[in-house]
Image (cartoon, rainbow, N blue to C red; front, side, top):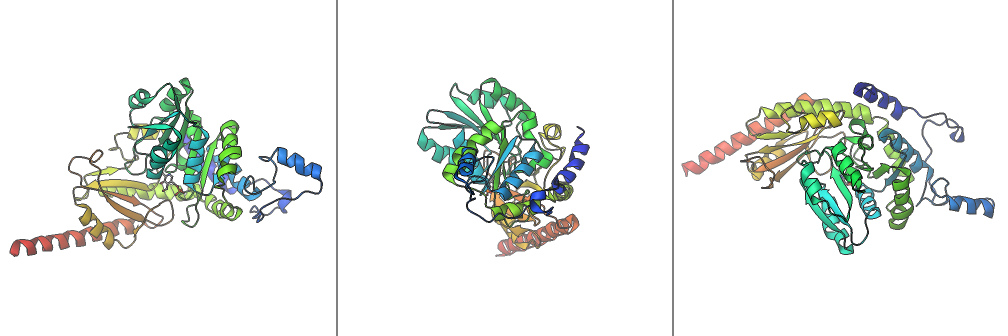
Length: 401
Ligand code: PLP
């Protein structure tokens, strides 16, 4: 299907549900605030228990409000099945655990979300599962890292500090030829801009906390894929580890989901406008945004994604302290972790020596929210004018002493 048609149709998918007589035609699925479901006969109870993924027995397994959200997300992702969790990390850790056992090997990209890397390197390692971290931009590096006992290839594309991509179709084909399960963290692109299952990836995880919720008021995660792989997680880690999504959270996320494509179109437009402005600023050495033609993987980005969201970074020759002082002066960008909500955010970090562009001393990540991009640009410019003036007067003071 043409990319633009697909994007247009998503607006209908999130807004429309078939008439549901069980709920008197209610426009929203009711919040099933219950821990258990009761039965009028023991026989019906036994039948439901034997098929807990389809029937409702206990909310740690299958709650109707959560199931409604899962079905909606599966539709957007083009998946047979989705399972929602209490957080992105609950979805990620359960998905990893479901696919490894003692003696197995995992290949993971070196730019994956920090706690995911930590989970593989320090937690899963306690159970004799070894992980090799590789530069995901290179399919050769991934292939070289594979071993006869590799069971899982873990991707995150784009990554969310340096915005590096993996070639998803190539990774999927390689892994499939060796019987290796592929998982991708697709949080940045959401199902609106990227559908990895159509490219051959086995499982997609998202932190719902970010764009899917979009309101910065709820936490959640989701894994989507085949009935076989997601069903195994649902019956195993979902039930055993208990990191479940509650009915209230599912209802809250459903509200956010209704406007996901609408919000993302604005995040995309505003993000690109601010990124293009930054390209011309004296304090910016390089902008890491896959939607910019200057991004080294821009061609791959346009090939495997339908659009770009509002989170990107830039590298600066200015010190970490200077960029922190600049961030302090911003009016509209709040200082904080996370992203994907209506609000713009900034975080300034020292660059890691392995990845920075030559001369870079700091890496600044911006989330472009739903405010006017012109206000945001003015904010960035004014904060820089004040910061550079204050640096210049401090330098003059030092040289005058
Ligand atoms: N994946 C990415 C790319 C993230 O940025 C985050 C959180 O920041 C997560 C996963 C984890 O999600 P959560 O905080 O919902 O557990």
